[in-house]
Amino acid sequence: MIRLFKHYVPNAVLLLGVLDVVLLVLAGELGWTLRVSQLGSLPGAIYTRLPQLISFAVVLETAMISVGVYGADALQSLRYATARLIVAISLGVILLSAVYFLVPQLTLWRSNLLYAMGISIVSLVFLRILLGKALGSQAFKRRIVVLGAGTRAQRLKDLSKTPGSAFVVVGYISMSEANRVIPEAIARDAIYNLADHVVVLNASEVVLALEERRNALPLKDLLRIKTTGVHVNEISTFLERETGRVDLDSVSPSWLIFSDGFSSGRMLSSMFKRLFDITASLLLLVLALPLIVLGAIAVRLDSKGPAFYRQRRVGLYGTGFDIIKLRSMKIDAEVAGQAVWAEKDDPRITRVGRIIRKLRIDELPQCWSVLKGEMSFVGPRPERPQFVEDLEQKLNYYAERHMVKPGITGWAQINYPYGASIEDARQKLEYDLYYAKNYSPFLDILILMQTLRVVLFPEGAR
Image (cartoon, rainbow, N blue to C red; front, side):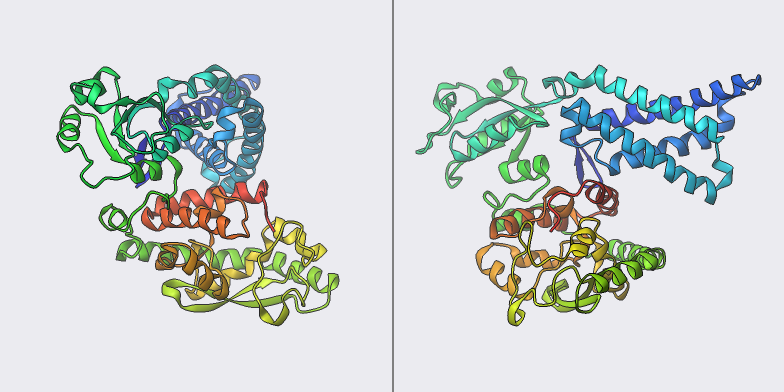
C-alpha cells in the first residue's frame, strides 16, 4: 500500500486511478478532435487546451471517487463497476456544467463534451475488462509471513481471503502456542535461520500475531529480518492499515500511546478544519434553505407536531450540546425521554420521515451547529448522553472518540451501515478511532467526497 497524507491506498487502486486520469484526458482530447474534424477544422496543438482537458479529467475523477468506483465491490465485479462508472460520468458532466458556468475559460463545446463522455465510459470499462483479473491477482498483493499460529494468526488468514484483500500469507511460523489453530504452521525450532527463511519466501513483511508477547519476542530474529529490508509490523498496526479501523481485539493502551497519530488538535489542522466548516456550512445553509423549508412543510402536513426538534448530544471533550434536525418520527416516539435505538423499518418513523432519512435531508439543519462550532462537517457522529454513559461502561476507549469534534458525516458513516446495537457501536468505534488517530485534511476531503455515495446508494439508513 501507498501512504498518502497518513491514509493508506492499495497499490492496485492507485495504479487504476492514475490510468483512469490518463484515459480521461485522452477521451477529452479525442472528443475534441472528432468534433473539430466534423466541422472541417484542424484541432491545433494539444497544449493550447491542456487546462480544459485537465479540468475535465479532474472533475470526472472526483465524481468516480465519490460514487465508489474504487471500492472493493467495483474492483471485483465488472457489472457493478460499469453501473458506478455510468453514474459517475453522468454526475461528472453535471459538475462540469457548474464549473464551466463559474469559470468560462475552462469550457469545452457541449457537443465535444458529449463525445468525450461516451468515449470515457467505453475506455474506462475496457480498461477494467483488460485489468480485471490482474487487479485482484497476487501480482499486486504483498507477501507476508505471520509469526504466530493462534487465534490472531487465524484472523489474518481469514482477512487474506476476503474479496479485495491487498495481501497474501505465504507462511506461518509457530512459536509454541498452547492454542495452535493453524495446522500448516512451521515450528520455529524447525527453521535454522528465520531471516533466510523469510527471504526465501520472497516476503515483503513479517506480522507479529503472538498470543502472548512477554518473553516470547524473538528479538534477534526480528532484528535480522529488519536488516534484510523486510518490514516488521505488530498485528494492531497491520490491521489498522488493511481494514481502515483500530482493531479493539488486539490493541493495547501502549500501542495507542506510542504509535503515531492523534494530531487533529494541532493548530494548523484545527484552523484549516474550522475555516472549512464556517465556509461550507454558510454556503450549504444558503443553498439548502429551500429544501429545508420544503422538508419542514412536508413534515407538518404528514404528522402532528413541530417540523424541527432539538436533541441533546455529547460533543467535544464530553460536553453536551443540542442538535437541530427535521423531525422524522412521531412526537411520542420516546416515552419520558428514554433513549431507544432505532430499528430496521422502525414503526415510529413517519412516511415523510422515511424519505428524508433516506436522502439525509433531516441532517441539513445541523449545519447550524457546525457554524456555531459545536460540530464539524466530518467527525464521529454525536450520540445521546444515555447511550454514551452505557457504551463507555461496555466498550474500551469509547471516551477517546470525544477527543475530536463530532460531525455530520464521518469515516464510520461511509464504511459501516447504520447500526443500532452494542456490537454496531463497537464496529463504528473502531472506525472513529482510526479517524481520530489518522486525521488529515486529505482524509476529510475523501470522506466528504464519498458521502455522496452514501446518499446516492443508501445502505441501512434508519
